[in-house]
Image 1 (cartoon, rainbow, N blue to C red):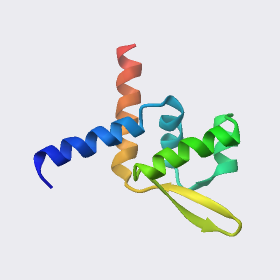
Image 2: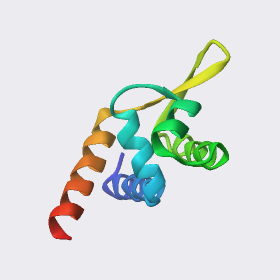
Image 3: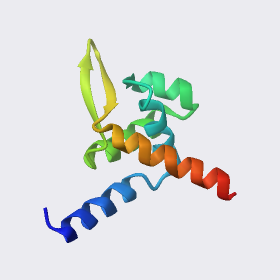
Image 4: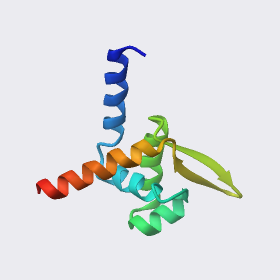
Length: 96
């Protein structure tokens, strides 16, 4: 991977994380795999909205889904993503 490829990939990751609800989803998934209904319950967001944001995160390679009976359990593909999000949230709280 060239240096420019690394910057391109980082830009894609940051674009995928640009929505507050997606940041909240990543924060929830940092605690372990969750099904859509569990995310809906913990985030207080509508199921179609959570599913839409999961599709974006999945397309960007941030989360993956694994079948769990009739449901799909989503998890982070890399724990570094949880650290990036946690650091960004901490920074925003300290700066604000």
